[in-house]
Length: 61
Image 1 (spheres, rainbow, N blue to C red):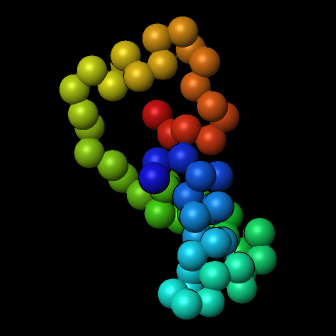
Image 2 (cartoon, rainbow, N blue to C red):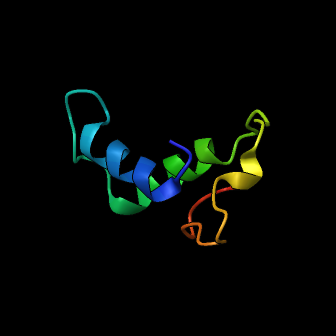
């Protein structure tokens, strides 16, 4: 879940457990932005993820 909007959609639909769709869109995006922007491990060949430079706007590099 490295993409903010993908994570936000999951959060909105599934969280809190048993109470899906109880968060506003903004609350879901805020939560997703928090954990998708935490430091991530550096993986080999990361430069090949988007070779044409067409990464979605919410992908963190």
